[in-house]
Length: 82
Image 1: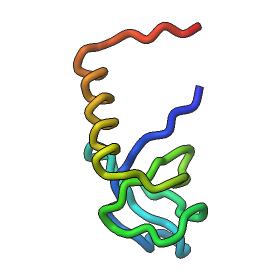
Image 2: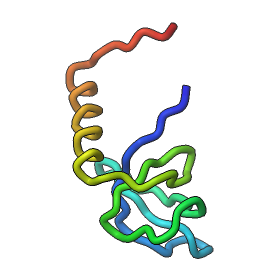
Image 3: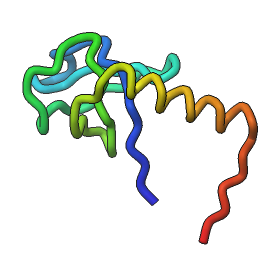
């Protein structure tokens, strides 16, 4: 199963090469590749999958998605695996 998460960009141009950014997800910071996107700026939300930013995301949509993840975590919802 694959999971892509909305994350907020907190720094652009980090790492050994251009095209990297630092993102924040609930206090966890991680360096990711921006190789698949152009023009990403600090404050943007991107969809993160296996270390790559796949697309930009509307901030309101990102907040709604993050709120749903938080709600699932708070309620300890069990998701059956087929």
